[in-house]
Length: 158
Length: 279
Image 1: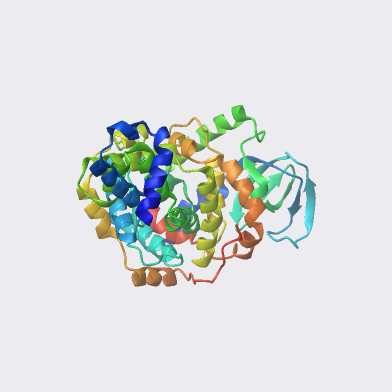
Image 2: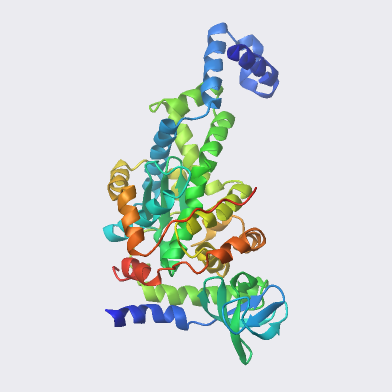
């Protein structure tokens, strides 16, 4: 079972993806602001993104490796050049489709504008939806199983 | 007093609305219209909101059915219900559904119904990412973004008396028009400001629920790396601000909060177990 899980998680962790940093950024030795700085990355520097941990992403930048703030990254080679990331997006899609395997087997066209415009009510599906709902207390139990605990956090000021 | 005020308002507004040309009016019709305006502009109460939401949800389910995998549906309901419990409207009849569609999208329906597509679920890598998206949608319901847009639309597109009838009575032609309008709203999208608000406050809901707050930004990065012309994201990109812009705003406004709760659980393994292995 554990092996199966590892096999499922592995492609996500081992996958390197081209990205650029959108502003001058420090490459850190660990995913923390107070970690040692490995090197300084210039705005638009190209990197390969490897994995995310909290607000940090592990990247390869040339021969160096380290962590940068996740929100400083944009994916696709060449940053804002749309031509570049089209190809990457396609490669990425093919890879993901291959791993899930369900997309090709369904004959559903899915949910587009035309479908929304012509949709008729489906009361049978609505009834199913109601049956899937869970009680507040049951959901709290499920959260506890995942070691999630609730905190008081205020909204930002408008 | 209220009635007099409304009458005054109607006469002032009359030149703009062709259907209110004065010579055509008789007193009875005028009274009906005033009642309609009163109904259409009042604060829609919770029961009415839930009824409108059920009608819109039934239409959306007519466009795409639910995935038949009960385990995935329960899983998404457990997470969604837990997060909704951390919101300002914890006692709505919250319901969550995974639509069997390959496109990437998520929808918030008034009254507490949230849909996410199979296509979007398949792109996610952790429960924190799912929680980030559900939290964003929960904010739309809590702040009544769609409900307000539907109410505004009713007043713009229906005559005043029809709008009043549509919002309060379940069986009328006007109601059917209103629900069509409400469903098509998911093709037009909300104001950008509503989407940005749902991002900011959604991150807070995820933090309250104990999740790694970077779940939503991670999904936005996944979307950002996709080709905007890909038909799988066409509708979502049309109805939302660009993911890059949303990420910029989150970085600008929410970075300290995001960082304070970023070490909370992502629950990657549970997500994989509950969603991927069942296929």
